[in-house]
Length: 88
Image (cartoon, rainbow, N blue to C red; front, top):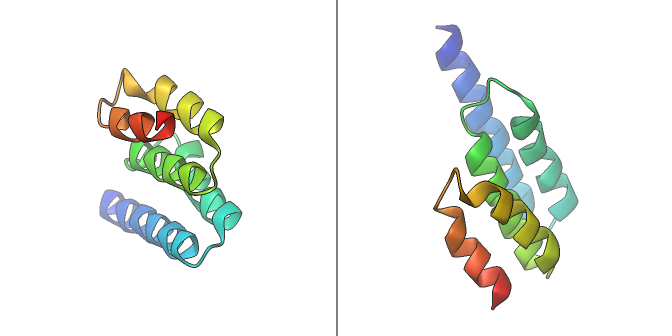
């Protein structure tokens, strides 16, 4: 039961970050995503890193996007798509 509750909380934090991102509150969105990444038991940390990369791209923070996704791409090949966008 604890796992289900923890996962539901993670999903709420991810959704809150998404809502902030869509509203243009980029740094606040990153803070929500970072909370997930900082939790070693979080099952959505990879997805949260991907969302931070999306925020960085929106802000034209290409170097940070590349750094984040390059470090993530070996473990998570899906990151290569955003990495390609950063080089565009």
